[in-house]
Length: 305
DNA sequence: GTCCAGGCCGACA
DNA sequence: TGTCGGCATGGA
Image 1 (cartoon, protein in one colour):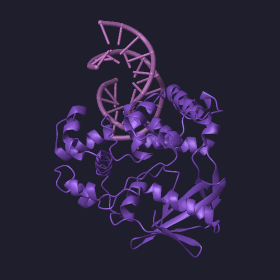
Image 2 (cartoon, chains in turn brown, purple, yellow):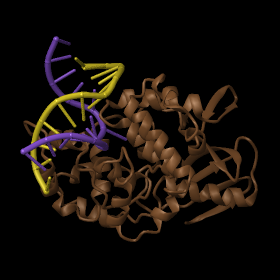
Image 3 (cartoon, chains in turn cyan, brown, green):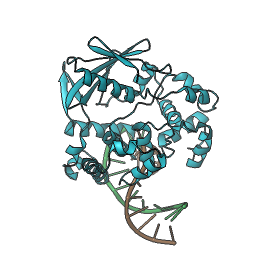
Image 4 (cartoon, chains in turn blue, brown, green):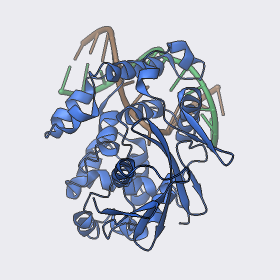
């Protein structure tokens, strides 16, 4: 991590392959997103550090990311944790030069890495959020998934109001561990999903599932197998979590319908490619499947930066 | 009305 | 190990 305190704010110095605007495009893809706000080129996010609510205002000038604290300057210890959080959120530890080198010569990716140069996987550092957001999104369209997340967050999350705008924290697993299935059913979650989400919350509340223990596994097969042991977590969800929470660049959610549609569109296919065909297409992506997938997702929503 | 969404589970061969 | 029905809902 490369950062410094600068007066009341902090500054981060990301690696060369970083483009804040491209990341904002991804972050701004849904009007229904409630976990961050984008306004005038700044990204606002509420986080909780050492039991303290901290509102971040994140901007970028040149290649320097600057984080301001609208609610007041927190302690140096908190600022350091915020720096680590932002570093993780934008996956800045990842050296993308190998990805770009590979992608420039790849028939599927070469145009994408030109179009979206500097885009990084926007991570979900909170394991509970990563798992349950994936479960929410299973087998429903993305707008409806965002609608359900919004209801979930506004029902069970913590909030803070600043200058008339409400900022939300994702619900904590210990709170969700104690609710009843019907409380989610009434938000239009299916019975099955309500069960899964509450079970995940309970498993995390008891310490049965923790980010720490999964992070320290050096074998990705082991991580995947452990995740698959959680009810409601299949191959797609396990890969998604490995990609978005643990930033495993080799995670490859081949079952993802978005990935399938992106490939169909880019290659002009008559139908969606099968899982085996996707494995073949991605044969050259070894080690970078997660980034290839993320850039392909990006290609599904063409927008101006 | 039909089909598809950032799937998963349990049952059955 | 591979396949299939059921789940539930919103949007095109």
